[in-house]
Image 1 (cartoon, one colour):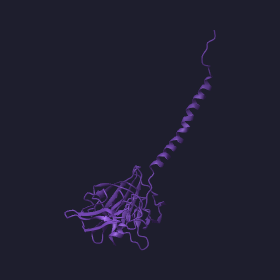
Image 2 (cartoon, one colour):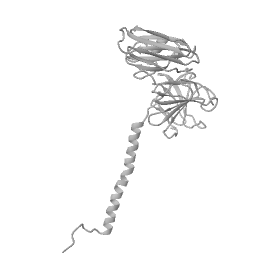
Image 3 (cartoon, helix red, strand yellow):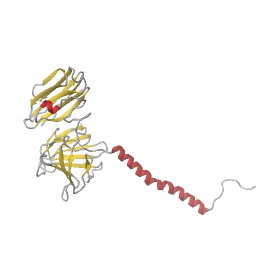
Image 4 (tube, helix red, strand yellow):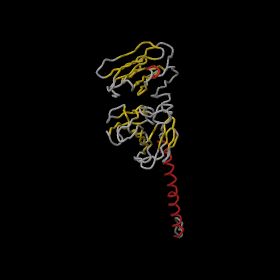
Length: 313
């Protein structure tokens, strides 16, 4: 009786089939790996804005050779607007760490680690909103300090870096949609903190005709803010006279009187408060506190915010 079972193929044919079966998935692996990398990049990509107030234009100078580290940007004066003392803002959201190298290297500087693991660095700062060694969560546009010339700097400017999650320099960083490659110097206009939800800038949202800087007056700039249900409370600082100012702006019930408050308390001094039924805002509450930490905040209806003692500038 003949033996039954699987057909018997010639040895050379069996080898060819096996090779083909191994080659197909192997050929697909690079394509799959590339697709995975593209998907990761799309998921984790962080978009950066200029580190300055809305509407400000400064030169982004990625000069070479002998710039250390290569690929970093020196933000410099453009036209008649000198960069010294300018407010510095986070170019993207993340966790900021504040450091101080004294009279060498970066001087006073901040590193922000972003959601994809990448980092940005801001160096030679004149002031920082937190003490060296501390950290804070920041959004895109959160104030982190002011431009100066601390550390190994010969003139006021902002040293800025974009680094990958491994710490490698991005030598062609992009801010506000402008890529500045090695050897290039470009004027970049900021759209950072130009208004809208979560903004910590000078523009109020929700149709309020008033702005924090408009209420506090000339010389005051927003350095922090906190969201409230129905509005936002702002802390401003006047570097010319060392005074702080708090104002709480409504975004609902505009034009109708409703409960709003704002307060400011320098450490070691009494708290000043403005509260009542207001149509647009509470404040301005101003206190002189050069070199002192302050506690600040406000409320709209039952929604309130109270900071810790901070901004010890």
